[in-house]
Structures are given as structure tokens and as C-alpha cells.
Image (cartoon, rainbow, N blue to C red; front, top):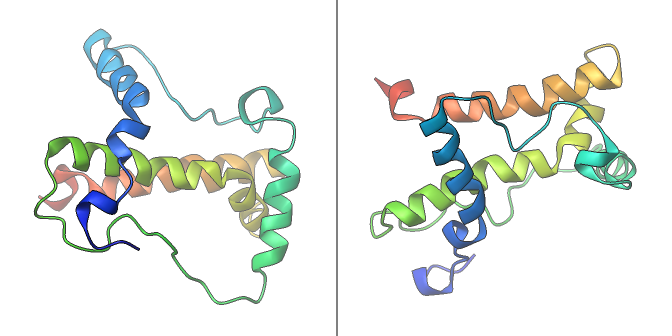
Length: 137
């Protein structure tokens, strides 16, 4: 992982549209989520379930690593845009692995749809609670 801030990915730019939609949803006080709970092919694509199952089987018995973890390296120099972008990335990465997580959760919960909901949304909610300022007060 690059230690120089100029070599790091610009998560704010990557997630700008998502962050703008979140701000608009906050202003309208309506319901909005960029990550649907349903394991629908219309939301996640035709190959997402097969790719998630393959990723699950690939990880069985392997060591757990966090390559490219966005929290590594110096963070004090990061401004509000970099921090907002990193927060969006923290939510996007687990969502991208929702089907993999669903397969893992299915070992503990009955049914793939329920496991998808528990392994995806619940993980994001826990991530938000652990990383939000209110959670630390």
C-alpha cells in the first residue's frame, strides 16, 4: 500500500456520486440506500452470486488478510473529502462482497436470502456504528 498520500486512490472522487446522493437523501429525509438487501441480479448483476460462491470456497481454510486496507498509513493529513471518501469505501468494499458474505453466513443462518441480508446489511450497519463519532461517545 502506498504510504505517500499522492499515490493513494482518491476515494472521494470514486464515491462522489454516492456521497452526493446521501447528502440529498439526508436533506429530503426520505428513505435511500445504495446497497439493496435483496440478492437480486438486477441490483448486483448476473454473475455476482456465482462469483461470491467462488470467493467463499477460495477462502475456506486460507489465512485472513486485508490487502489494500484504507485505514493503513498516515491519516492526519487527510482532509474532510478524503475522510468522506474513505468512509464510503469502507461501506463499498463489504457490499461488493455481499454474495461471498452470504455464503459464509448461510453456514449459521437458514436460507440464502436471509443470509444475504444478515451478511451484507448487518455488516455495513455494524461498520457504521463502529466508525461513527456517535458510537465513540
